[in-house]
Length: 563
Ligand code: FAD
Ligand code: NA7
Image (cartoon, helix red, strand yellow):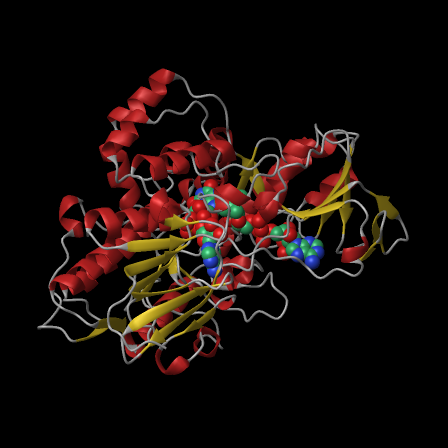
């Protein structure tokens, strides 16, 4: 390894989704650093480049599923539906890249396979599969938390004679019109796909492992007058979003479910069912659906009663009805349960009738039936949060691999830095906020830009969190998660969807307002919890907060930070 202290570039960013794109702009255009971004895909956009399956869309309302940093663009960029379809989000991100001429510093089709820190030079060496190798002082991982596909190892998988695809790698040439389609998985992705695929396919077979609580999204056209009103209010909207809990653009409820009568509860549930949106149903109805078992049971019972009303066939309704706690990522969709009233949609419940094998013709279940298919879709989700980190040969001080650090589950300080990995930052790293993600990405990018800017100004050689700060943050995240009901449901949020993956808390669940407040406090205290070398004193204070209001959220649905 070179012992030169002069790097090829100041900073390397890995990934060109929402996170990497804004990070590149921040470091290059605002801080004046030389930056190279590497992206595995053949285009920018991350999630929105890869997930082109029928029905792919954001289920955050479109007006807050975007960046807020470019106020002019907020006024210029129009929309005409409540939720943005995948092509719309992709077009938006491509526009940002063109607008800031970021493409010239993004190397596409290049998967980073290794990133190693050299303690002698304090440089990162980043290598790609094609033999490319580049050194930098800073490394920012914007690898995506829902970006590494989970492809279950089902017997006979490679024997299927039709097309077998994962939703996160939908082939450009695949048209399911008139085909016999099977789908494994009924999460956010699966439910989107099912609703869109049913009218296209000749026949759709849904292989469901766990039934889902799904509420209407309320999607529909948005007229220009509403777009104009939203644009006029963007300052207030972003202020509310940044200081809210889930950052979805609605006011979270402050009312406890059991503090009102049963009739009132049902009225509130119905009102929010009619408005639509999964996070609104969980956090906008009452403040304790995610924390109080009785409140949760009431919300779950309401959704179950809707399934009963909507689904014609009682056996199908029974199969679709969840009985567990309502504590996975809340889902919403346009007519999910209604889809099962179609004659050409068949539901197979693999808990009762397991998949035995995939055959050349389709899927054979334990009852001996071979479900014949032309296309088999794995909507089986992701090795979330740390999956893409572990896929790289990522090594910090002493050559220690990230897997060694994360033997008991992935940890971080503030969801954006890791002890033993100097000058390395993460966007949406483990124990970052559980929210609508673009506002949290912006908060992290702004903050990372702040600390790097201050390090540059103060001649800081290395900056990294202390193990103690990381341990304390991990404990805080665990404590908060355990105040909620989420750990009681098996899902990707805790890594339960990947066989053999250690269950761990992977999110800060107290909300974006509390998270931003913590970031502000850390910066104001001279980067409390970070160790720096080569500094001419402390690294100074950040300026990023001064432009925005920093009122922490006070709604009861946000457990308070206790450490
Ligand atoms: P990504 O968009 O995942 O980008 C990460 C990039 O890093 C990818 O392009 C990947 O190729 C690249 N990369 C990873 N490893 C390497 C490597 N080793 N070398 C080179 N490149 C690498 N979030 C919401 O808040 N609201 C929603 O409604 C919503 N809907 C979603 C719908 C779908 C179908 C999916 C899959 C996710 C959705 N999400 C949603 C989550 C979504 O991932 C985030 O909102 C956001 O797009 C994340 O941006 P990112 O830049 O952090 O990650
Ligand atoms: P999810 O939410 O992890 O859903 C994956 C689905 O696939 C879920 O229904 C799983 O059942 C099912 N699954 C996974 N493995 C298997 C096997 N081996 N057999 C049968 N069924 C299986 O992923 P999504 O992509 O839907 O959503 C993740 C996030 O990404 C979401 O927030 C969106 O924003 C985008 P299970 O429920 O585990 O029983």
